[in-house]
Each structure stands twice: as C-alpha cells, then as structure tokens.
Image 1 (cartoon, one colour):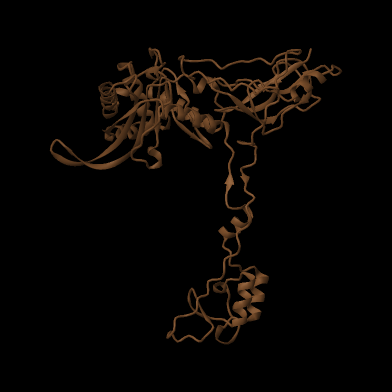
Image 2 (image 1 turned 120 degrees about the vertical axis):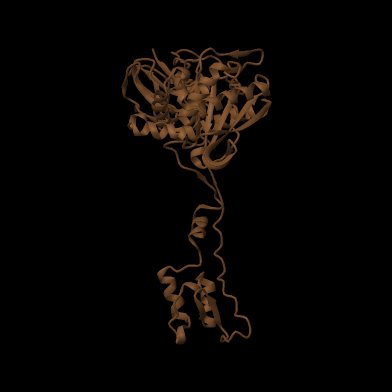
Length: 462
C-alpha cells in the first residue's frame, strides 16, 4: 500500500517547514526509518524519515519550498503500484481556503514536552492540497531576492572651475594632491564617458590632461563609479531577504509577548570582583576548571529560583504554574536569529557541569543540530550580551515564562567601599517581569538573592 510523505511537526511550535535537501531520489528503494529529507523548522534543521517501505515513486516538493504541516511532499509505493490518484489529488486546486494553522500552544507549558510525531498517512486517506510555496530561505537557498531596479546612472565628474584669483589657467581642474589641468576636449570626453579626472595622470605640457589620457583611462578602467556605485548598478537599489523559519517564529513569539504581556523592569548593579577572582583561581587549577561569567550567573539564577518558586513560573491565563524543578534557558545567537537551549535541573548541576553543558549546547545551537527536547521546557531564561560590549539592556519575555534576566558586561568602575574609593568590577542586570505573575517586590527579592550568590561566588562551588 502506498505511503504518503507529509510535512510533519518536527518541533512543538512548528507550523510550517522548509525542505532544505532531499536525501533520496525518485526510484530509490526506502525502508521505514530511512532519512528522506532535511527540513528546516522554526528552531533547527531536522530529518524527515520514511514511515513505510517501498520505492520513492514521486517527489512533489522542491528543495527550498516552505510547506505547512500536513502538506504532501512525496509518495512511497510499490514499483508497479498506481499512484495517479494520490498525485492528482495533491495537484488539484483547493475548492475552499485552507484553514489557518492553529495557534501553537505554549511550547513550555509542560516542564519537558516531547516533540510531536505526526506519522505519514497511508493511502487511500484523503490527500492534502498542495500548499503554495514560499520564497526559498535558510541554508542552501539563494541568499536574497534582488530588486529589478534599473542601474543608477553614472555620476557626473566632479570638476568645478577654480575660484577666480587663484593663479590657475582657464581649464584647470582641482584634484586631490594639488592643482590639475585639463583641456576642454578632455573634460568633455571625460564627462561623456564617465571618467574621473582626479584619477588620471596627465601627459600634456605641465601634466595637463589631454584627449589621449582620457582614451587611455577608458582602456584601463579608471571610472567615476566607486565600488559602491558599481555594486548598486549590478544589484539594484535594494534586496529582499526571505524570512527563514526561525526568524518567522521569533517575530511571532515576540509579538505575542511585547503586546499582551504587561511587563515591568528591575535593574540592579552587582559587584563582580569576587567572581572575577574566582574565575582566575579556578583557571590556575587547569583548563578543565575554566568557567565564564555566564556560567556563574546561570548557577546563581538557578539557586535563587529554588528560593523563589513564584518566579520559577509560567502564566497559563487561568492559572499560574509554579515549577518544582528548575530549567534555565540561555539565549544563544545563531546566524539568522536566536535560540534558547535549556539546562535542565540547573540548580542540581555543579558549576563545571553547567560550563561544559552550556558550551556544548551553544555549539550545537549554532550548527542547527539541537533536538526539540533541548530547546523546550524552560522555566526561566537568561540572556547575556556583555561579551558584545553592552552595558545594559532589556530582554523580551518568552511566554509563558514569567521573567527573563538580561546580563550586561563586566567593567571596572570607581565605587565607595567602607568609606573608601576603590575600583571594582561591576555588572548591570535587568529583569523583565510579567506583572500578571510576578509583583515588583517579588522580583526585587529574587534579584537580592541573585546578588548574594554572585557577590559571594564561593557559595556556588561548595
């Protein structure tokens, strides 16, 4: 019996996927579980596997196509099995508009949600109509759709006549590096041909630019168009960059947060001097003990969440869910957006375990190799831009989480300690709070606890 290969929900928040690459060709023998294609989801590039045995008889989607969940992509069947009805049904135009994709439930409603597994249906189930494909985007697709705007005309050569009384003969033109003369015929030819006089060495009397200099300049490619002008002429006035799946999801999720979520912000400055000293002392013990400030912050946040479960929470509209387990997500910048891999039970992990796991997750996130289980299920998020030289910023909450902590850079500042002026290493943090779940005093007490751990980092390793 024929098996229909459909676009599956390969992540909990996925609504459509882009087919990056087929790994099987038409006519190839396939078995259940074989990888048929690579699909870009809203978070990563995942493998689409076969759900039946047979021959890959027909591929109905091209590499680069974006298709909603349930769209028919291919057909697996016996070598002589008739699949005309399946293919014809997929190609037939829809008689009614397709229903909009249901709004995804919050990806983090449960502590550790599992990825959805929508098996490919078997014929003769009703075929799904072929969805309109979007512009290619992401890995393996054209970098951008370029405009068809006409090339910009070449700029007229800048050759203003010299001011009167400067001692120049009529017909001389000013150029970088001193006075430069040119004949009227040379100037006219230069204007017609788009030649810049300033880049030409004259061969006439006294270095005067003459006709033959303009002709030679054309032959050697000395042009008034700068590299930017040449690029503009070749590429047009602008270029349209198609949205990748991850960028679409970021836009949708942050729009959900920035509008409906009543957010307030709490900013504090912590003393990071002891944290810097601890890092230096650990590094002296060996490379295996190396930790970053981000690792220290994640451990401090995890321990503080254990003391303030009302912050380790999700807003679920009709209730607030306080979690007994602490799963801290860390924002990682990737090529076309960001993703938040999760450190599960971070409060139970040692500082070195956090450091090793954070590095591993960040590396796999940038390679787009994370599984859905690795970037869903967070109860709180930490976002750090300090390594980019950012002193302070506010981060947008990732619903349904109740808060997110934004970390700025560590810098030397003069501060008063016990009545004495000292230079200390300071770090600014800003907590974004969903006021429906976290009140001001609650958030302030949480930050006080985070401060206690960061300013006394030995408590993080005991």
